[in-house]
Image 1 (spheres, helix red, strand yellow):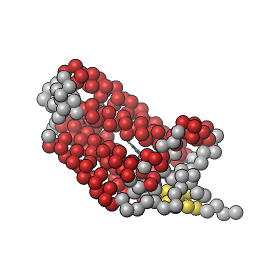
Image 2 (cartoon, protein in one colour):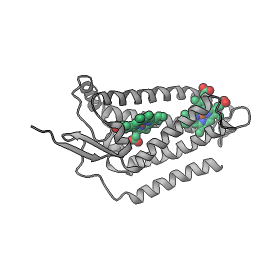
Image 3 (cartoon, helix red, strand yellow):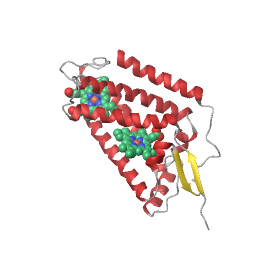
Image 4 (spheres, protein in one colour):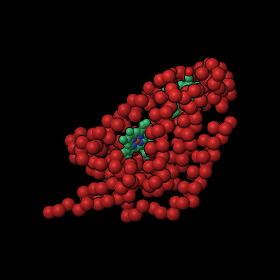
Length: 228
Ligand code: HEM
Ligand code: HEM
């Protein structure tokens, strides 16, 4: 018997733009602190600016997680501990069901990434490089808090690298299992043999007004930080 192939448009344009812009900005953030930062004249300025862009992207993503398209919503891809544990078990025995949005483990991984990125970028706003750069909120909470945040900024940056490593390892694992997740993040469309467990009759439309609102708020926050 032939298995039926289902194609679902899971990732809308804004999620895809969000993802690849985030990747570029995070790479710049690490590049400007882990290397000499050439060819940038003031790498720390570029570091901060990529951080402001990341904050805007995250603001957009949190709003879109609440009011965005079906598969982008947190309510679609965050599952309780029971469902997550049984998915993990099924994954080990290679009997895991397919999901249109993030699978239960992937969903928590995404949330962890978003929270860690948020902490990283927001803690950066209180820092100085002790030479000539002072972030917009430097000094607001006093020198001692700034010192603690500087240590946490450094520690959390290592955690972020681990999370990104796990993210990539997860993608390689799913690719080996025959799931084409990366092309889906490029084209928006996922292909399934059979129906995914979280498949919805139709992706909700009519989000244009929410999208414009989310983009305006995100651009406003980024712009304010950039020109502060
Ligand atoms: C997600 C975004 C960010 C990432 C991934 C990131 C990453 C890093 C890393 C890896 C370091 C080096 C830590 C160490 O010395 O061990 C660092 C230092 C620093 N970051 Fe960030 N950062 C981000 C956002 C920001 C933002 C938004 C600002 C300020 C507006 C900022 C300001 C600083 C400063 C002032 C330092 C200290 C540099 C020095 O001591 O020379 N960071 N950051
Ligand atoms: C700095 C590095 C990266 C970060 C911070 C990052 C972050 C994220 C985040 C936050 C999501 C969730 C998307 C959403 O629902 O909003 C995601 C999903 C995804 N990312 Fe990345 N990513 C990184 C690198 C990459 C790379 C290098 C690739 C592939 C070449 C990739 C491919 C994907 C794919 C395919 C998904 C969707 C996974 C699924 O279908 O469940 N990511 N990433």
